[in-house]
Image (tube, rainbow, N blue to C red):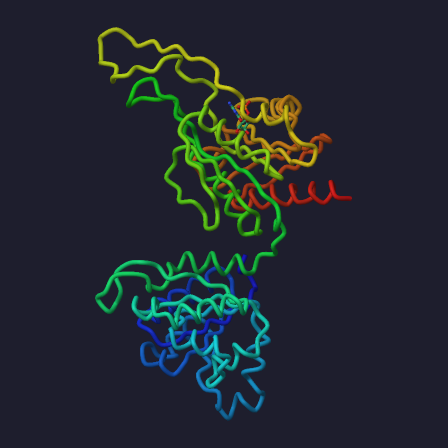
Length: 401
Ligand code: C5P
């Protein structure tokens, strides 16, 4: 997402400046071309040389540099970037921006630019909570700046509270969001993810090795594209992606209830969860004791959530399923596509390395209602998610035409 993007990193003077050096490294690693501009105070914490070496570009420090100002460099610098990230943004920088003050290189660029700006505040908790800073924050939001809120925790000044620079991963994600076209804006999407647990006593259950990664990747990419995202998740260890509304469930019956409650408002539903096909007919109240003889558990079928959605699907809703198979991939997937009334199905062969449960990559085929089959090369689950949303978006536009 950041490949060949030009990012201007504005650094103002707070102790978190040292973290911005790492941010430059991460941005460059993702393929961005990074130009750093430092305020005079920032240079008291870390020298421009550090940023110059990490970004491989000259660091801007001085509005009145004879050499660069012969080319009116602050205006050029303001035109150049696809995105400006301010990290750390001090209370002083925020105040100047709110007032429209342009008295140094960075603030002059900020007044002259039309690029989106991500403001990442970092300061002492009292400074953050001060009514003047909070008023400036509101003004910045009104002016169209995006804010990456500070994290809560231990601060360099030995106090606790809000004011730590946001985690670098969150700043990276915030940057990617600002650079992603909002192609799903105004749409509500519903995604299921992860396994289900079907308990037969208080400590034992039937399940499968689903990690939830595919469903969470779908939620993350849809949210980046500005959809309203509901994620119904079975038990897994993943954090909800930024901006996603998550409902956590355990069993298939709980998942069905959550999905059926949320689906009528969804423009698209993607069922990526590995729902257990069976649940134990009975659940012991106490832990079943170990015994010499074997243990027999009787299972009964779980409802097929996707098939139920297919039966009541509104005409404009896009319905997508997954088919994880160990044999006859295409034939089985095609059968499910028809039986469950889907718009398309994403099929993966569980016997292939780098595909299916728990890995970061997936090798899938997408089968459409028309019968067309797209054979995708092995790619990350986020890339598979992008391919899926591209197709959903095509179906949305097709429905409008
Ligand atoms: O029939 P099969 O279980 O292979 O179908 C897989 C698709 O159906 C997946 O999209 C899965 O999320 C969904 N499914 C469901 N309810 C079930 C079983 C599967 O919604 N009980």
